[in-house]
Image 1 (tube, helix red, strand yellow):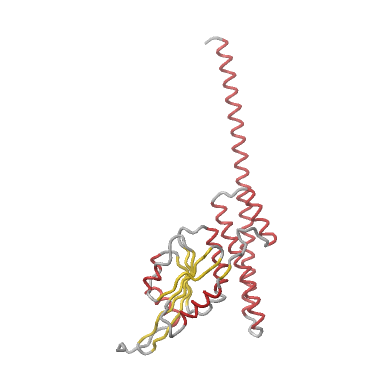
Image 2 (cartoon, helix red, strand yellow):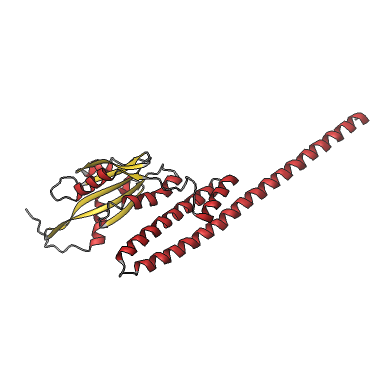
Length: 267
């Protein structure tokens, strides 16, 4: 190999070594940035966990105040709202950590944590069509009505009554994989000696619902339960297999105690 070729090869080798060194430095910087973001999420998660424990203790103390019913309801409502917002923030943090959140998003979450004045991700903006929801609720509860169930879904930023009926098989068709919804169901329980109507409240979160919308369900559920307040059992469902009348009745039986019949059916 000529001297000129050797010099040229050495220069090229030096250039490649320099580029490789720069690449290694860039990778190290990216790794450091990623570790910093993960550490911030870990610290924030610990703070949120601690706040949830404190709020749970506060809620327990409020429950013990039996002599101040009006003030207790007001305080419980405020604590529930605050607790729901923290639950939403907790879900957002978990999702963000798994999906490699940008540093700007980290700052948004930290500002939420410091002042509870959160961005639109956790802002409670859901409204209710109160008239139609209350009418459906009272229809299901009425002994003179054939209506056995009602379903409530999201129409934009409002919850509305989307359907009601008497056939349980039709009730099952109301929930798709992309839906968030609530259901109110009336079932006849008991035996031949003690037949009675029981009511169940159902929250549906389909498997395709985003993490953000899943997190909002706790707050949205608290809003609709201001109207739908009378039920024996509450279930959260996420698959069609769980929408089963036998499973519903079993849950109601567990909540209401055993049946004591003679084994003879009424004719």
